[in-house]
Length: 212
Image (cartoon, rainbow, N blue to C red; front, side, top):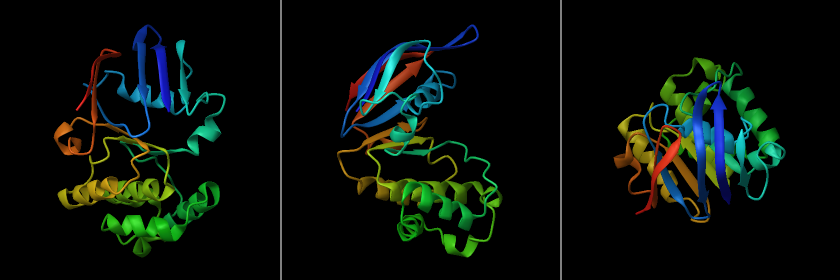
């Protein structure tokens, strides 16, 4: 479902990705690991169509992330490490998501409640003003409600308390097995029970790729 073939990406003289190749297939649940600067975030952004490759190609569900980005993003749920600085109220944000992604608000409420967050009590607040943990819980709830074929989480538990982490893992365990889940993480012990594959990157290259 995601085909990465000899992708190279440079920023000035710095090589962020150096001829990286790998495939992510239906049913894969992958821990993507490595130190800061290893190339993990760049690889994710390439998959999402944020950057043009200097060399190589990426196909997501047989589509080009640059040329067919809108279609690809319909199939992807993404939770970033740092929540975006959205100035909309929570109510306005949920309305936008309902209309743009055809997601039921009640379904979002259900999954956010599973994260132990009563978001209805905060509808009038701006998303930007919510605490880091509340933002993360809301974004996780939205991603779960979307029911995508590809889920990408960049350090998803960074702002979560222990109970919220348990709730997050419970949601993941209920997910359909035909989807792809990609976890960018520094805590392999937290996702070890959820993944069937570990990829370690360093200096823009894949150092190891093991099924577990």
